Length: 51
Image (cartoon, rainbow, N blue to C red; front, side, top):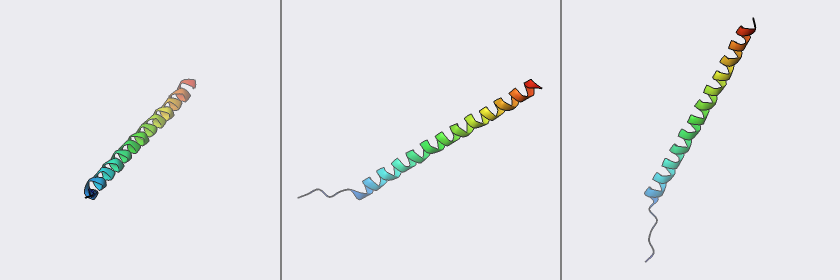
């Protein structure tokens, strides 16, 4: 007798994988936005020092 695949387990693993991937994507996005805003604020401070 051949073992039947556990579709609920497979589905749950895929859902967890997607959730993890989306969280990582969100973290990269937040880090990118934070670094861009830090770069922007650095430029404005440099402009103020020149005047």
